[in-house]
Image (tube, rainbow, N blue to C red; front, top):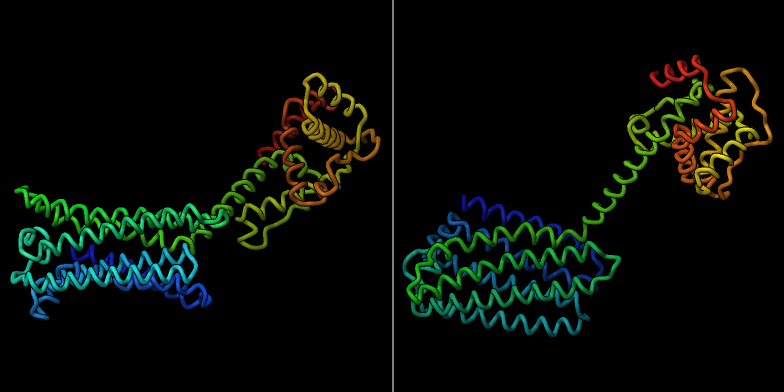
Length: 420
């Protein structure tokens, strides 16, 4: 189980490396210094996880004949990983010249720590293989105890500095790059989870000096690194693919709004369908049949075609009833406009069913602005408002007052059409 977990973590790091290397190759020369350190961080993290797997680590030790050499290699990769992450963030935060000066100081500190670690390992010369429990097995051993404290303190300090730089970089990220800001914060969270490893080992080592039995802490500590990997991988790559999530969310929102308006237009569409059923658009492709925006587009077109064929006019009796009802109810301007048009449509449909011409005092034009009349979005909003008013009680009262209330036979016909 441990082998599988560490190998999966290594694969995750390699996927991130492939992604970042591709970005490095495609980036302009001036942006490459900021991408190279994250590639180097992946190059150091992947072998570290491979060596943490007991099957690989113990195999390397036996192949070289040096017990616990794999542990030293893991520690060396850890120091390089911390240094590469700091270099990456320094290049993001500062101009190139300043970032290079700071990176040289970080590299020098990492090189010094590595040199001291190698010397302490050589002086300690561990003879027994303890790949899985190296910290607890050698917590009291001369030189090796100092090696453990030096590495884990340096690792912890370096990771906490990465967290600090990530937070500062996130706070300074432009408002138009929200996914980069989220990525930096996720990266900070992942690194913080990874720092738990160093804390657990230090507690186990120092606790053993005072007689505390904390061997389980040191053995379980590396597992926290595997928990950090998915968070860091997502955080380091989300700036590239995160905007696609935003676009997908926007498409879903548009589709839902189109479906909602499509349903809202249904009563008006059904009522007008009797004008000329042959004018209905038959979907020609699967997209036209299942895409809510396409379905809504054609529903708006069909309603407008039927309204044109119906030749809805402005019946003065209906208009007067609308004015009285609107004044009594205190309706707003937009509500009055929707009720007036819906009432005129209802009157024209009733008159058509009775075979009686409507008293026409001119076209029932729309009072909206010209751009709203001619743009699809404006037509869509207008017809949705009209459809809502068309089935409402206000229009029913207006039509009844104007003498266009449906008779019993007409009500039966309306019910039959609604069921169709």
